[in-house]
Length: 414
Image (tube, rainbow, N blue to C red):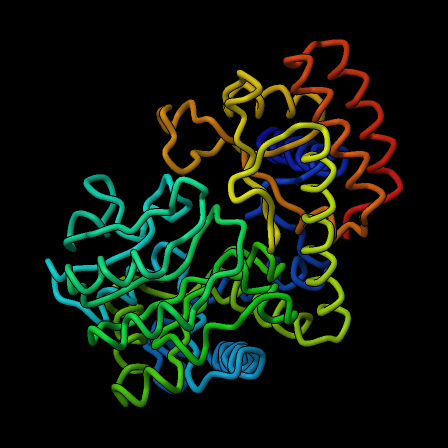
C-alpha cells in the first residue's frame, strides 16, 4: 500500500511541476483557486445523496442539502435565472439530460458541425449518442470560418428541428444568441445555448448573454468559469414561460434519468467558483482574457500566421497552418516540447482527417489566471513562431523551454 501511495504522490508532484513550468494554452483548461481545491478534497467526497434537497433517498443529508441549495442559489444569482441544476457530472451528460427532457427518440436536433467548431454532443453523427438516438442536421461555418445566420435560418426552415443548439468549442467570434433564438421561435423549436467555453466571459460581462433568447442554458463549470469539472443546466424565464414544468423535466432527466448520487465535493467546489465569479475582480479577469487573446492574435498575424475568421472576439484562437506546410498534430507536439501546450484542431472545410488536422487551437484563460498580460502575449507569440518556423528544431525547443520556465517562476499557480 505504501508503494502505491508513493507512486501516486510522485505522479501528483510531476503533474504539478508540469503545470507550473509550462504554458497552459488549451482554451478549455484553467486553474482553480485554493478555495475550490479545498472544497474538492473535503469530507463531502464520502457522502451519497441521491435525489434533490428535501427529497433524498439517504439519511445524514442536512449538509448535503445546504451545499447544493447554496450552489443553486449562486448560479441563479450570477446568471439571473429562475432554475438551476448543479448535479450533472459533465457537459456531455448535461446536454444528454436536456435532450431527454425536451425530446423523444428520433426527434430532430440541429447543431454546429464538428469541423466548424461545434461539439460532439451537438449532433455529430454515428459515433455519439446525440447522433445515434436523435436525427441530426448540422449547420456549418462559411469558408471564412464565420457563421451565416441567414443560411442557418433557411436550413432550420427546411428541416424543422425540434431543438436548435447554439454553442461552440472552437469558434473565435461573438455568438448572436438573439438570432438563434429568433430562428428557434420562428419554427417553434426549443433553443439550447451551450455556453461551456464562454460562461466566465458572460459572467464577467465580456461576451453577449444568451439568457433572454434561450429556453435552456447549459455550461460546464471549469474553462473560463474557473471551477471544478462539472456542469450546470439552467431553465430561463423564456423557457419556463413556454413550459412551467421545464425545470422539473430537467431535474428528472438528470436524476433518475441519467445518473445516481451527485458528487457533493464537486458541487461544493462549484459553489466556491460561483461565489468567486460574483466578485468585481472577476470582471477584470474576463476582460483581460479577451484582451490577451486579441494581442496574441495581432502579434501572430503580423508575422504571417493565418487565423480562422482572421482574429478573435473571445478567449480562443484557431490557427490555420496550411500556409506553413505543417499539420496541427505536428505543431502541437513541437510546441509541447518547448513548453507550450495547445491542441490540434480541425478548421472549417479541413481537407485533413481529425487525427491530423490543419489547425491548432489555443487560448488565454489559464495564462490570464496566472496574471499574465499583453507583454507576455508578445513573448509567447514570438516563441510560437520560432517553434513552428523551425519545424520543431530540437535546439530551439530546448532554448524556449528554458525561457518559459523562467517566465513561469514570475507567475506562480493560484
